[in-house]
Length: 144
Ligand code: DQA
Image (cartoon, rainbow, N blue to C red; front, side, top):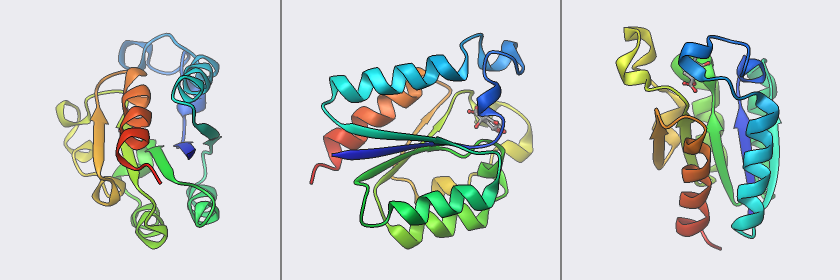
């Protein structure tokens, strides 16, 4: 089982950005957590972060034929990007959406998730543990 974990804009600033919302753990800590989880689940993992919408779309397209499951936190592009939604639909690889914070309890504009419409599971407001739960979900439910 090959997993792709995708993080969108500003998630590389974890541990620096709005700590009262996103916590003090850094992006490097998140990467380590994802790698440890993949090892425990006996899965291969590729981890990708970009601040650019097109780079995220390119990465999803590249996954076609190469990746069995996607875990994605599109960050701010969650609420704006039809392109990321279309890319996820185009490759139709099983996908799980993650948000560190509970986007349903924040500003109104964070309530819509375009990418989420192409995801079969959603792990919202669980902090970094959301990535662990999403990876477990994909490995348990999308075995090839
Ligand atoms: C986020 C929530 C988004 O609304 C925000 O733009 C982010 C992070 C989260 O993980 O809680 O950058 O996706």
